Amino acid sequence: MTTAAPDGLGRAAPPRPNADVAWDDFDTAGYVLDNYATLHDLDRRIIADLSPYYRSLLPGSLSSSLDIGTGPNIYPLMLAAAASRRLESLERSASNVAYLRRARREGADPCWTPFWQLCRQLNPALPADLDEVLRGLTTHQGDALAGPPGQYDLVSMFFVAESVTGGRDEFEQLSLRFVAAAAPGGHLVAAYMAGMPKYELGGKTLPSFPLDRHTLEAVMGPVTRQLRIWELPPDPTLPYQHDGVLLLTARARHQPHRALG
Ligand SMILES: C[S@@+](CC[C@H](N)C(=O)[O-])C[C@H]1O[C@@H](n2cnc3c(N)ncnc32)[C@H](O)[C@@H]1O
Image 1: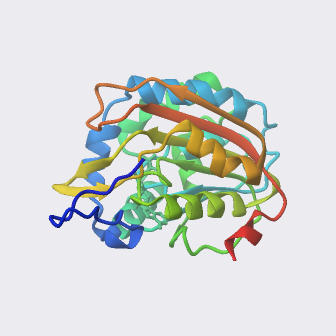
Image 2: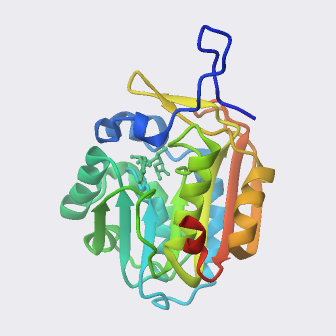
């Protein structure tokens, strides 16, 4: 598997690293329009598939949770809002951080209403008011590749490790950082685009690592327990070439950050 393209001299170009992208200029409005202006069947299915995991956690039983690379997608925060007493987000892009902080100040865009209704329908322990949930959100601007190990009871990461780099090495580093952000035994929840070689946003081509289930299992197996990975079929209404979505739930093993050096 490779994302490399010929460089004109017959050699494969190296995969594009995360640092190759001006993340601060991320086209937040275009991304919301492409993905979240309406509730796609794929997100409906993701929420329906992951809600039982969140529902199995007692309301208020987790002291804090972290979503990595949140972008403007607030439904991972919605899913965690019943179990977690404190919601935090780690996001690299200034434009996405501004979106999240605005949502905290001014309330969520109306496009999120159907997502919230679905999340509440599937988890009645969620509070009644989404804006109240968002007022409790702390957003950190930072690089998930550089983050120190955390002690979060739950860490989520939706469409990040495979969607922000073209290289397997960085995919693995991001995966290990994801696990290391959790306390030993902490809950891990993630979603990945499968088989996506790149994606276009705001006239720019962004790097992507075309992930498959076997690679995900090989990377996450050694650093987790109770690992569960399953696949959803592709959604032809999305503007991305992809083979479907991989969903993951697991618990963090002890000290995965040792592997980070
Ligand atoms: C494909 S978007 C996914 C956004 C969102 N989680 C979702 O489900 O739609 C990837 C996100 O990762 C962020 N990102 C890219 N590199 C990052 C890094 N090194 N650390 C943290 N976030 C990063 C981007 O700014 C963007 O918000």
